[in-house]
Length: 180
Length: 229
Image (cartoon, rainbow over all chains, first blue to last red; front, side):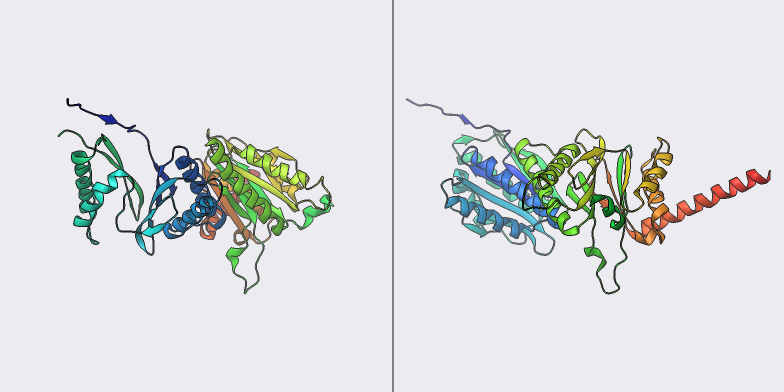
């Protein structure tokens, strides 16, 4: 006997948190922990800006987040969240930071969390180059989504895409995947 | 203790316009070798609220820090930015607490708090060391505050604050009444609706002072002509 399984996740849930004008935090994991932790980090980054008159750099924000996550991990109330932090620094340029729920931090050229990572990381490995242009990077992202559409069990109808450059955060059109 | 305090305090003026709030502060002339930018009397508490203080700078640092934390804490718990009245009440409550317990002394600062609520209403509040606060349309604190307030009472009309520029000019005019050396000793900050705090550069202030002087001369000319005819 054959069965067809179609599983649909909620597709209007925005998991990205704007920490500052040029830093985005993507936070996934335990329900509730995600929003609680991300909003806490978000407000503390804003507080730094009010106190000091300028914004935290992406590297500093990433390390601040890591320290907080590590401290909570070693308390009675750990947060079970996986994070990707993306930002643009005037001096160092764009940067992507991968953080997992054990508070391991790594600066990476590309990264992914979740079951989708099993499929997309190999695509990224194969086609990523350090000198990608903006269009090429978006195409690479589209390639990853095509792969997910082909091989991933869950139906993921739309992806929210945001881009960070020297001018700040830009919303791009939602990338739809589905039957072509 | 608080009556005499006014004499040493630098003059400050706050004006509530229609789409703008203005804070003007008399700048103490700094020593030759001192870096000017470290003497800042106007501080942002959040993106839509700022305050100017007069009194003990060290005490002010503490109050401002607590207020800034409270602004973010409020955003975290209720997902809304603070209203100007809320943060004024918070600061005033903090000050009052220190007047009623042992081992502590009151915060030696008066503050002018300006900003916009999230429904777009402009607000101006004043607090003093005792912990009381009041809302104002325009106010002054510091030396000769009474003179400045009388000037404002005469000159604060719907016309005089009709545009953003007019409100700024009114603040400068009010300060010029009592500040000795003119534009160089004035520090001015404005918040426009939905825009962050902007501190005017000395060049902009000089231009506005020049305009005001010109207008004064023209007024004097007109009066002379009227008398002679």
